[in-house]
Image 1 (cartoon, rainbow, N blue to C red):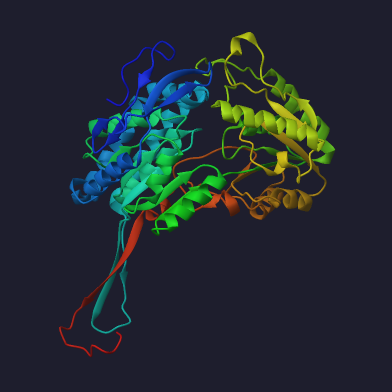
Image 2 (image 1 turned 135 degrees about the vertical axis):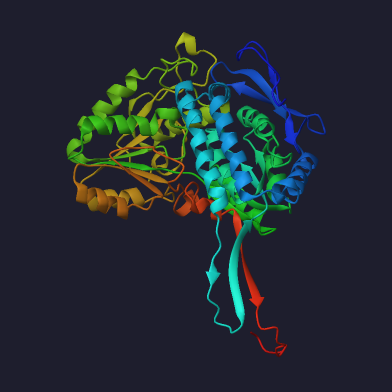
Length: 502
């Protein structure tokens, strides 16, 4: 078993192991990582700190499965296993959600919904497994029959973030399995436990050993995995700076990459918007998930005529947000996932004040007695922000909102696009024509109109500019885990001139 049986978090320390070739094993050098519950700052679990030798063993196991029983399996049989895995994830959603919430501090009520929905991804991509079709191409060369095949790209390395490990694992794993690839996952060192727990379900679903492997560890573990010459593709979610390092390392052996990186997403509110709905959307965009989401609506662009009213509404709601234990259903915002991130967020609050922004609400660590020991930051709102301030241009990844006024539609679009990022954007207006104009003009991979922060399995997700490369979700994602092979069949049986092309 990956995770030793334990009572609820806080009463015993869970012990994880690596999943390599269907076996649960410690790191070869015996090193471990500690996972800290961000609600109380206490160690609640440990996981191995995998070294290069462990990584090599996992990649070799994945390669053997690719060239063994998994590679020999029909696409329809693969699809059945993928759908069965989804069923098991759904059956275990409550326990998985609790593990993830304890690991990263996100609300149990959010994680419960998220985990309960993950089965839909595996159902969708399981159904796609036997529908990966090539094409018959009319040949311009006499006496040749030509066609294409889409074959699995090979061993996939997934480097996962700490904010939504299982959701973002699924974005990569479900289409990769559908394409026939095998997998080595490396969870974030702060949040390894839920990915290990999912690993337990593969044998139960009937997958051959080695199809799915998990190596827990730190940055050095990730570097060894990305650099491994037998890894054919790297799927990464994380910061833009880290993504650049991953891409450079993968390029050394020409591994393909999908990168879902940072964001500084604009939430644009026009004067004709439903301000009650917009207020709710702004709150959802920046304070849900404690702002620890790549698509956080961290820049609020408000038309000047409604600026003061909207700020008052958002600030009033922010001040009532209930911070607390993420496992309790009444909690609305949990802690920051780990201490370094907690300190980073507070440093940006100091930076915003130094830059001349006005602090409207929050801006401090929470001091309530029942939150003692946890990494809690108050919901924070700055006004008087210019788009060139660091709090408006750099990804904070926490509950910090920068409010920027605008006068015209063109100005709003210019401010929205004046960023190195381009992951998400929100548009709030009752004008249908404006909604389309702005959605088309904003350089972002996802644009939500009169809504915010919606995703699903069949709609592509990814970023423009330095928010990433490639798209996850949707049928096209399956092709990103395949190689296209062209096959030429000579039909005449005649000998041709060997020194003439074609």
